[in-house]
Image (cartoon, rainbow over all chains, first blue to last red; front, side, top):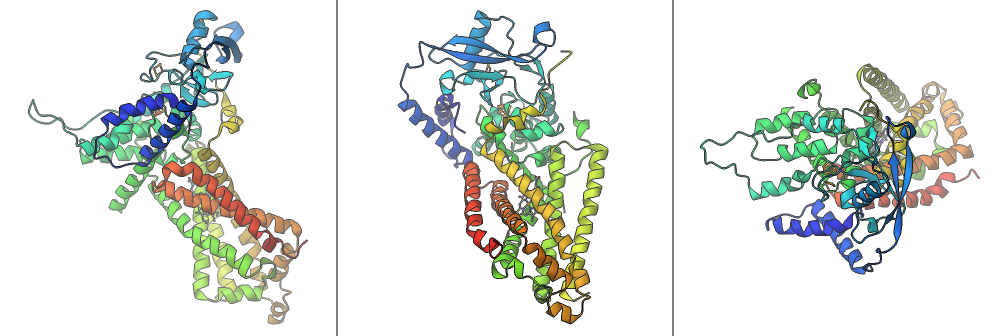
Length: 293
Length: 121
Length: 141
Ligand code: HEM
Ligand code: SF4
Ligand code: FES
């Protein structure tokens, strides 16, 4: 539960300012609080500047079905100079620009917003742009996300992930209020409730970490369920809509396949309490069904 | 996308029963182990001793309930585990049938044995 | 995108070194669950010797030479069976403790301590099993 700490402390300060004062402390809050304290302590005790100067080894998974020499998957080693504040994405870019222009990976925002650079880094799903080299033991090993077909090098096929996301109708469907100038208001409490669930950046790290999603292709997966949570719990949508959303989630391959392994919660770069949300939806579904019996 | 989910089947019932039986089993399984390994030693079990216990209605009822809930919980757990592996279609229905038959057979045989032990049958 | 590379099962169990607490808990719960169902079937099969035994003359039952009593005591006299019983105890205790942990997780209680509660299940299981070894192995060795 403890890596990718550096960014979290920044993020955390940001969260604090947007937090409403009335908020009740949730388990997720406590978990993040613990993480934050641990990271503060570590950052404080770390020698500054030590990482500068030398180089480290970057091992990258290579595969390309269209190039003779790369049809057999393999790892390539690159020697990359360490720089202060260097992320895994920076290192990949360095390797591509200095050694091999065919090295392929997706990236865009470089600030954990677009969700395009989730990789399997040193045995764990992480965002390349959010992972500090100084937080990793060398050699740094970068692979494409597990449980997704590799298209080329670090690029995986995200089609199935997007299908699952779309299956839960990931858009607001509440009635628009009458009157042109009427606003669609949400209570502070309700906004707080769904706050964490709105942070998803569709990176697919959670889905890749889930071995149930890997075995059962129909399972919606953590990201899609969290997306559904975001709307099902939004009070601005009418009750019938919530019922409709619960119906999608309450299938055999919906929330019920979650085995509470916490893998998704552990890897989510946006710290979304995925397991907590899935569990809440399970209880919600049980309650709804008990009403009908 | 929606049509993929048209064949609606709720999974909440088996999920809930799995937890409810679990809560019951915690107590009974612990009791069972304790009674037959610590209070009475397993190596000293005799038919006469077993019948004497089973002749008490409360004990008989508990044991039969133990059997029924454990059978449901166990068989349903195995089924859930197979669903997690992505079992679908005909195979899924076949597995469900086999598990249901095995479960019912076990419950029937076990109940019969318990009743015989208690002298009712 | 005509081809792609599927890395297969290596992705799961080949990576066991990287598993986290929740994953280990799931694997062990599954394993212990399967052992328990397996045992339940065998258990009822063995206890079914009570059917012929119930027809035995009352003298036979009193002398403890009916099939049920001889089968059970015969099994209990084997050291292997006794050792397996300790294994069964371990399996049952872990399944119970982790089962309780899972029930709490389902209720949304203590999610932030789910890894610690798993380690606690392991430690308590070990303690209970070790403390029970003398009782379970009494008289066979
Ligand atoms: C005594 C207390 C028990 C408790 C608290 C308990 C608890 C649980 C829980 C909560 C699950 C659900 C796991 C999940 O779906 O995520 C489960 C699964 C299971 N249980 Fe139990 N159980 C108990 C006894 C038993 C017994 C007596 C049996 C055997 C007959 C058994 C066999 C199973 C099996 C086969 C599974 C499915 C494992 C899998 O996912 O592959 N359990 N148990
Ligand atoms: S829930 Fe977290 S891990 Fe999953 S896709 Fe969204 S941001 Fe990525
Ligand atoms: S590059 Fe956008 S999330 Fe990392």
